[in-house]
Structures are given as C-alpha cells and as structure tokens.
Length: 309
Image 1: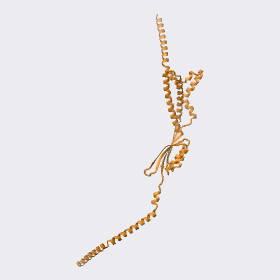
Image 2: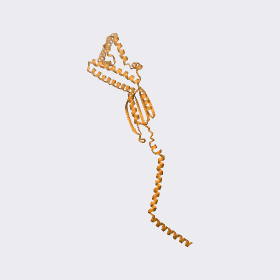
Image 3: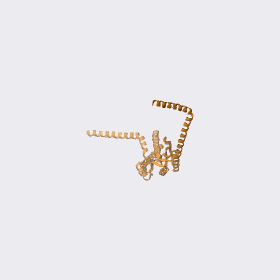
Image 4: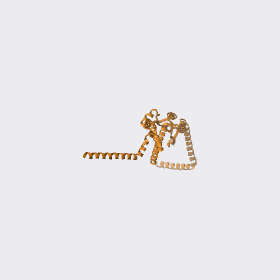
C-alpha cells in the first residue's frame, strides 16, 4: 500500500514538472521574440538565408572578424601611414616689419599653404611695429618653410617644433567606423524585413543612433587628417631697426656748432658794448651833473680835513 502511494506521488510530481517546463518554454518564446529580434542586430542575418551550412558558418566567421577591433588594428597597423600633428613657433627680429610680412605671406602661398590669422601692434616706447601670424603649411614642406623664414630674419630669438602622434587614435576610429557601418547595413536589412510596427520603430531608433555615431567618427577622422596633413606654424615678428638719424644731425656737427656758439658770443659782446654806449650817451647830462656834485662834496670834505689837521 505504501509503495502504491509513493508511486502515485512520483507520477503526479513528474506530470506537474513537465507541464511547468512546457508553459515556461512557451512564455519565454512568446515574451522574448522581440528581444531576440533586437539581438539579431549584432549577428549575421544572412545565416538563415544562404545555401549550405558551411557557407553560413564561414560568413559568420568573416563577419565576426570584421567586427573584431583587435584584428583590425593588427592588420591596418602594418601598412597604415603614421599620422603626426606638427606645431611650430618662431620668434624673430627683422629690420622691416612690412617687408618681412609680405615675404612670409608670399612664401606661404608658394608652399601650398594658407594664412589662418594675422595681427599687428606698435610698441608705445619705440613706435616700432610687431605682430604675429599663424599659417598652415603642408607637412612635407613646413621644415623648408621654417628654414626660409629664419634666413630672412635678422635674429631668431626663439624656435620650437612639437609633434603629436595620433596614429593609434586614427586606427581605432577606422576600426570603430567599419564596425558601425556593418551594424548600419544590418539594421537597414532588418528594417526592410520588419513586419511589426513596434519592431520597425525600434530598428529606426537604433539606426538613427548608429548613423549619428558614424558621422561623429568621420568628423574626428577628418579633423585628424587635416591636422596631420598641414602643420601649424606661428611666427612672432619684432622690428628692430637701428636709428642713427638723430646722431648724424646733432651730435656729429661739432664744427658747425662751434662756429654757431662763437657767433653768439661775439653778438653778445657787441650787444653789451652797444647797450653801454647808449646808456652813457643817453644819460650823459645827468652823469655830468652827478659828477660835478660828487666833485664839490669831495672838495669840501678834503678842505675840512686840512683845517682840522
């Protein structure tokens, strides 16, 4: 009797377990259909549509290799051209600011570059012009351009060249771009095959996000390419003109200044004697009268002294 009861319970437990598994499997399939379709975005959809299982497996392997950034980096790093961003700064002294600026601008165009920015100001003490010009020169020619600028200056006060290697960043961007483009093509394929509206909206949202990321990556790659292809050169120009004009006009005319001073002395003496002569002639009557009075006073004083003595 006990054995029958245990057997009955075992059979009942087995029926309940199998029923629960069956229901769970159905619920998982029905609720996870949308999620599976979204996950298929990162897989190769062509597996179910191509002929032959081996061909499908090989295509899946190729797709996975294309999405592998490590393999892409290793492959591309062998043949890729290194990308280095160069920045140079020069500080020079010149005799003629305007002439030097014209020559630099002319050389920039001859080397296939262009002027980015230019500014000029004047020193309030010396009234000499000074300024700064920023130019972009093709990388393969910018060292020759710097040498030419240095030769055309009176003095090179400061010179520096810095470089930033962005090759690894560029390779990484290329790898990410290929991966995003692969995802984009798959999303477009899923979009064409989508039957449900909610699936179409979900794929469209993911597609827009991927395309935005692609544009961002392309923009950064273009920026790095432009910076690497054209070096940036900033030139500070100071005019250092030696003025000898005042020295020649004033300090070097010693003999002329001596003659001029001698003439001034003679004129002063003549003017003094002339003033004295005019004074004596003009005041002669008064002077004669004063002389007579003085003579009488002196005569009286002497006469008194003789009497007293």
